[in-house]
Length: 205
Length: 191
Image 1 (tube, each protein chain N blue to C red):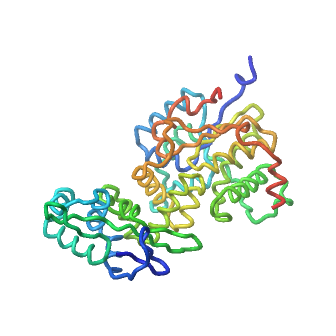
Image 2: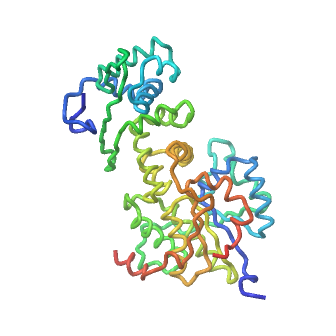
């Protein structure tokens, strides 16, 4: 099963029809569903009893969610040698362009949604500003870790307050283990950064 | 006495650093107060950064991160900086305003999303140049969690002849919780 429209593309396989868009949407807003999908993605070939031990919903809900995810093409079911059902997650990639910025929605983002119980700021941003804003901020915060954007720019581009942006930034840096490993701050001096005639270069432009 | 022994060190702090320490009272702010005293320095913020941290939902508005330190005298808020972003650079003669314009352009040039940077980012650089303009025996340390801004802080003041500046970049930002409120962090390095 795979997705392919102008926006949704299965990351690994060829084009096919979207059959489970409502479930796909639920995946981005339902923490428990996101948690189950992420658990399957992290443990290919996992069985239902193993999943019941891992996630925070009832046995009945696990089977209901497995059925929904499979119907939507987000997971596939096979049988192992012992005859038990095992599950594998399908990769996907959804690309949106918001305010001139391309946002990519992938299983990595779903894995973040799955942790929103542990990081209430994620749920707050999704609830108060919508999932697309959250996805935009998520991409911008990844760009921040590369030095491509400042925190105030993230706040402006995602239309979030500086305080909310900082709280989200701290959570996502922790979840994705972003940043360098050196415990001390990097120190820049003029010797590190002064090279050419900056005034001419910038004012000419 | 060497030249460095005569110099006073000022620290300019970005909003994100105070956010990482939490609202007063917090153990990190207590450590910071002690480190400021031991390092013999003062912390400076621009007015726009003060406003960014102020809670305007209270009556009267209160700044839960800075007000205690300001009242105790170890945090200082600068007087207003130039705020004419649309003025052409060629028509600006004030070095502080020139520095803010240069920082603004530099940040746009460095960003993945040009022309979307925030004028408040450039206020750190402008404040550094103002402290140099107003004090002949000073050196400045800036603290931020934005890479391009950290580089701008070390890059722009030399354009005005000020080389006694160090810029400290905290990545990940939460590194500041432990690393910022220390004597070492607030003191001139031997780098």
